[in-house]
Image (cartoon, rainbow, N blue to C red; front, side):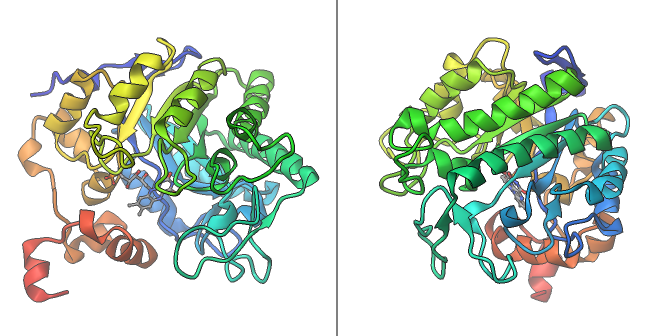
Length: 379
Ligand SMILES: Cc1cc2nc3c(=O)[nH]c(=O)nc-3n(C[C@H](O)[C@H](O)[C@H](O)COP(=O)(O)O)c2cc1C
């Protein structure tokens, strides 16, 4: 079957048409050079997966040096990165796939080893709740303003490199989320203190990036990724997120991307509430602002079910690592050939680098089944 709804094009608010409703979720390969410039391994990895999905989102790229969260992270922190980023954009823009650069700062999710002796920064000096986490220092007002400008410069650099858009990483507990979260943001200046003020940093980032786009390339796509909830107390609750989304409706973003472990998941805080999160978000979204949802999508039937439930874009992560030609195989009516497991024998063919393999086998081991053969071999 090839007449799936997810193959239908979608025209964004800014007039740009995306060839289908499929996206590759942002996934770092942790394989960039020490200064954050792209390696040939990464180019090959993206090129292999380009051409099928409508939008391909890169792993996160730090907008300034203090924003670096882990080794092997892509950087968009200075003009030196332009040649490498240009090669990356070119590799991704195959067969009308739109190339989206995810831009971020890790904030308190970094450490002084990664930052070569410097203390991580955040909205406030509150350590994340994880073993061994360092306590960050609070950014000064001047540094907050500079960080916002760094997002604007990163957007400019992405335009110059030939990307089709940027995705602001407001999710997964990184700096933009840290400003929104009552756990990490205890400020009492204009950047914190109330729910409204905790929105100021993310909204200021959106505003400066939107301004660059308006001035330099109005057809450039601006996406925003959010995590709808936090487990911490105090922490982001769904009502906070819905309030932020109402504000985002009035900004010129082109899509909203919800980061979920499972696309159909309900609240992780209120266990008695079984309604999928996307069903709570979709009705309050501006009608022309599309919703992208991610999480454990693997089969065409699962993606189609999500579309039928009213979601506009489906993002896939690990399945596109296992199966770079997922879209092409579905298009060709060859669904039986889709790989749903991963064999270590396929590493070279799949262009999976050792750091990416290590990441998958540790942080993401549960959702990344090896093939039966490898299990038997105890690899
Ligand atoms: C190896 C790996 C790297 C990831 N890196 C990022 C990242 O750079 N930025 C981000 O927003 N999410 C990142 N994620 C999360 C994914 O975008 C996605 O939300 C998650 O994997 C769930 O989707 P899936 O079940 O389809 O894999 C990463 C996930 C994986 C597996």
